[in-house]
Length: 68
Image (cartoon, rainbow, N blue to C red):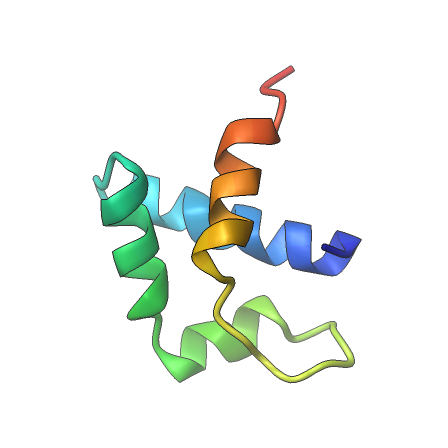
């Protein structure tokens, strides 16, 4: 996972928590249903097309990101 992918996954996971979702299944479900417009905004500075992060990517972000 590249740095841009990590940033996008963090933004999407954080947004899911802000709207009140907790737990891996709820977060991945919300991210999977992300609107194309939001994906475009999240990936606006990236040279690659917008893509919804996979469940594996979300799992790695949630479990391996240090809060410090």
